[in-house]
Image (cartoon, rainbow, N blue to C red; front, side, top):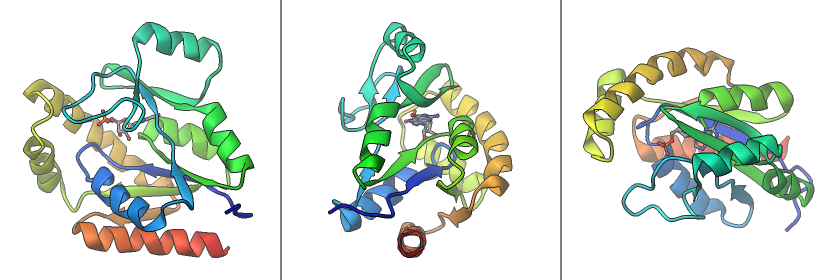
Length: 190
Ligand code: 5GP
């Protein structure tokens, strides 16, 4: 169905905050109404991740070529890798009346918020730093060095939360999902 109020949603939150879990519940409920923008990245796939579903996994050379060809709506370097949102996909979806969710880090989100003033920006917060560190370690997908690097980035990311339209604290997944759902329903009605 074509939605006259197609909007661009930007969801940001520190690595390990559980954005993925909250978002998969969200998409289960809102299938067909809102689209997830699959980003490009130069990082290697984690166990279970699939090309074209979690990310488009591309080489640094390809990524740089895509930057030159102006293929990205935004892109950022994060923890030694590049991440970017495909411009055509997002703009075409919006034009076709479909809302889109970008799940991106703070530098990219900042660019989008500056350029698309009407976007709906949502920051997902961890209940506290200890919990975040436990989650990052618990998923066992990063080396110690990578975890420390990510924890360092988190501190500056949390500072950015004040620039977002909504802040959702992910203490319990169900509660965070309900908050996200009510933000979406409210925004659809505006
Ligand atoms: P991860 O390596 O854990 O999948 O992602 C690292 C960070 O990059 C996360 O904060 C994630 O939201 C962000 N990210 C994923 N895709 C993009 C993108 O297209 N652009 C930007 N700027 N960040 C992204």
